[in-house]
Length: 111
Length: 114
Image 1 (cartoon, each protein chain N blue to C red):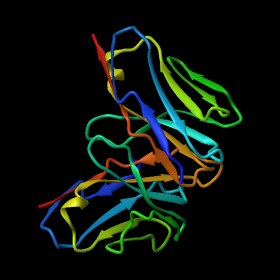
Image 2: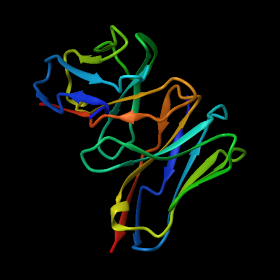
Image 3: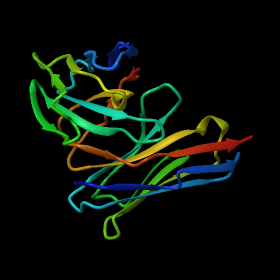
């Protein structure tokens, strides 16, 4: 089955700096790659996603890049704010069937 | 609120007891997923339904676990003869079947087995 690896497991940045989280996947059939933000005591919430026919997608301060050849995708958060502090998960899916999640990155934005 | 609803939010039980969790998905969503999440880990796939049909089950889902979605609406996840290793957050999510759509997660049901 699919194996998704995520790095780093923890990340601390100063407010205003950028944060980058990287994931790799193993199954070349995966074609949908969402990113989720999870705050303490809550379920994960989708923040951005990308499909395999696109190399990059941006939504305000958040962007995701996908390299299908290398089987890796990354989340970029610019101008970080304290409210960005949370655990972020990447995931890979084949057409929305099973979703396989990474192990998470705990992001702390220091004011 | 028309999001995914899970009940109960917290359950403490003794080893060997049976527990059941309920998930009410977003009404127009035909796919429903169950995940398990332990501290410091990502959600781990357990099973998913499309309408009332259970399409896939993880190898992790032992015989003690059973899930149903009898009318294609709400779903239940039952764990029989609970073990301490079953302690986790059980997350339910729903989505539209196609194209691959956003998973909307509930707040989860936290199980503690003493």
